[in-house]
Structures are given as structure tokens and as C-alpha cells.
Figure 1 (spheres, rainbow over the protein chains, first blue to last red):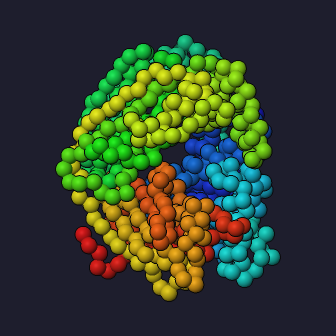
Figure 2: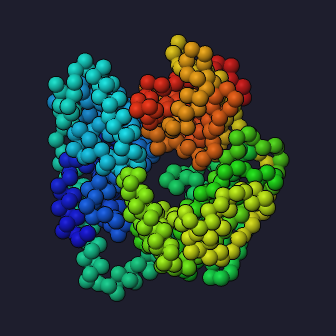
Figure 3: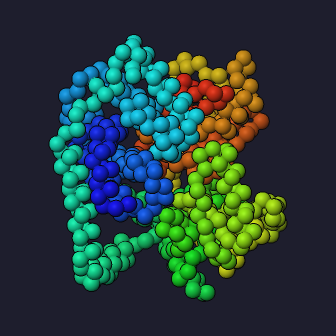
Length: 156
Length: 402
């Protein structure tokens, strides 16, 4: 992958990267860190990319891994996670929906957002999360069910 | 109808700045690479030397293998035991610098270096003369990858006993096999369906017939020809199936060396024991017959016994459920830990019992104390239905023994 092509790819997926990082870290500053680190790693490891048609999913997988690494490191930080989330909560249109999403376990939340919000197909989501397509489908089903129970309303 | 996008703010300028920074760094690196190759070479050499110095200073042993991203505790440092085992020959050097053993889990760092493509696997581990069971696939992969897309082999391995070994020194023995490809190594594609998997397998077998060595993508595991001596019969001298023989017979690999490493591990370390009970009036289709967590400096081990319940799930259904799903532990009340923090420690950690199923999960020692609450969530699908609602909440019993 050439430098120009990589830059175009990255610029084109900035919103998806931000939302994905946020749906794991729930913090602008940590999300920005994770994105920067993930992009540098993706560029360094571009030789590992075997299928050029899946480069976006590949970058996203590196980002998800980076976010999870950061999440692990946060457990050792003195400031509790709740306080971090509270301190860095940006203004959003639907805070109730955001809280409901935060209440969902990550393994349900991520497939839902990657598929329904970011538009990745089930196969891509399965590859990003190192799982199978039926498992992704099942988790999305559970996520929607739980969100509906929490909000008493359908979410799309 | 609510929209998921409303739960997120627009991309803040901070994120765009960091993307720009990453691209600038990347661009600067490329410029240097293109315009100043000699300087880049010199810098690389300096950097490599510096990194070598750092690696030597920081050590490259079992603590780095176990805790690659976090700092080990003082207790863990004290538990690492120097070994200094070394072998050299045929352009290959193998070093076992140190091990860590807490009486239940043995972790060994293994450093293999080779001048040419080399495949290595640990084919068996014994503690006090007894095989630790299913260890195949443990530390298996390429030392020197034949293709840049292949991940190199792990720098060590861990085996966990279901029961704690006796106090006092423990004899540790493991067999490390070194293999080299006899033909061109060909990474295969990644299958996305059973049909694709079968097509790739057939393609791999055609390549083996041509004298080449097909391997899986990413991990680079050897693919075998189904038509060529694929016996998994246990070798009585070994106590377990010999994967290396399988690779020699059916995948165009040559046996370079079989190394047997024998050493003595320090005695079992102290550990605390906590028992857990199912919390509340949770309606489960099976019984939780027992849940115990064992904690040492090196890890947390949670053993859970599930039994069939009359009027609930039958033993067969319970076994199928546990075999088809991946049990995962969540901790911290109200904030389940992400499943990536859990190490489902290899195969053979769960199995059928007369009453139902037993499972043991291993978790890196992130907390200093046992968690107050554990969630065990069989995740995945059985009969097409997700199992999230089967989450079991277990609370630490008040009278825990220490």
C-alpha cells in the first residue's frame, strides 16, 4: 500500500475510527491516543496485509486491539474508570442512548455498533473481533434486545 | 425509533490532530527512507545496537513473555527462576533463560535463533515424570518466518495443572522439536466458509504432492496431506501424539533436532483460596456444584463444576452446551471486564464429568485480591440461540479459607 493510498484510507475512515475507539474507551483523549498509535502500527505492518480489499477492516482490527491494550493499562492507573468517563464525557444528542450503550457489555456493544452504525458486514465484523459470523449475529441480536429493554424503544 | 449515531459526538479536533500527527510521522519516516539511505542505515544500526542493549538490560525472559505490556510485581520478579539451559548446532541456538512456577502453572521462556527458516514446537511437558496432558500446539510456529506476513512463534509457553503439585522442588521436563521445510513454503488463503476451507485444503494437498510446504495465514501452521500417514496414535515412549512425525510424513518437513530439556523448579509457592457461591435466586438450568478461585502471584485460577439438574438441563445437553461455547469470566461488579483479559488456557482445561462438566479458567493477576463477584458467561450459540441470559453471578463466600 502506497503512502497516498494509506492517507486517503485513513481520512475516509476517521469518523468510524473515532466511534469505534469511543465505544471501547469512552474518552476523547484516550481514543485519540489509540487512533494515532494504531495508525502508526498499521503503517509499519502494512507488509502483513494479505488482502488489499480488506484494508479498512484490517486497520480497524489493529485499532480495536490498541484500544483493548489501553483498556488493560488503564486498570493499573490510579483514577477509577468511572471518573475518567465522567470527566471526559462529550455532549451528545442522546445521552440516554449513550448510557444504555455503556451499560452493554463490550462483546455485545462492539458488534452492534460496527454493523449497524459503521456499516461493516457481518463477515468483516467477525474478522475484526476474531469470532464467527453466527456469533456476531447472535451478539447483535442480544444487544438489540437489551437496548430495547433498557430504553423501551427500538434502536437503529 | 432512536438512532445509534446520536449517542456519539462529532469527531473532535483533537482526533484530527492526532491523525495528522500520525501521518506526518509516517511521511517523515518515508522521506528519510527514500532520501538518505546511508544515514538511515547508520541510524538503524545505532538503533538496533541500542535496542539490543535495552533488551539485554531489561532481560528477555519469562517475565517479558508473561507480562509483555505491564510491569511484573516484586513478588513475580522473585518467583522467576534462572535456568540458563543452552543448546547450539546446525545453525540453530536454543536458550531457556528462566522459568516461573507457582505450583499450578509452569511458564517457560524459550529463545530460538536460526539462520534459515525453522519451525519449532513443544511436543510434551512432564512435571515429576507425569505428562501434563494435551500440550500439542503449545508454542508452535516459525522461528524465522519464511514470509513477512507470518507471525513469529511465541517466546515461551505455559502449562497449567488442574491440581496443585506437591510442596518442594519439582522436576520439569519438556521436549522441543525443530523442523525445517524441504520445499518452498506457501502461505495459503484464509477460508471464510466450510466450502472455502475444503478448497484450500485440496489446494494445499496438491502443493504437498509437488514437494512444497503449505502453511496457514498469519500463524503459519503447517498444513498436512490427509492421504499420507496421519496417525494420531500415542507414541508409548512419548505419552502423546507426535505432531512432528505427522509433519515429516505428510507435510514435507525435515526433523532437524529433538531436544529434551530437564530442570528443577523451585517448590510450590503459597496461594490463597476463595470459594464462591451462586448469588441470589438465579434460575439456572443446571447446578453450580462448586466454584473455587486459587490465587498466586502468577495468576488466578477459577475452577467451576457444573452438574445436570432434574427438571432442568440434562447432562448431555450441559456437556454439549459447554463444549460448543466458550466460557468466559467477567469480574468487577457492574463493569464486566473485557473478555480479552482472560486467558482460556489452552485445550483440555474443561471436560466431562459423571455429573456434568468441569472447567478451569486462568486469568492474569491483574488484581491483588480475589474478585468479590465473578460472572461466568457461556457465550456463543447453542441450537441457534445466544446464551447471554445464562450468565452466572457468583459471589465470594464469607468464610473463605486462606
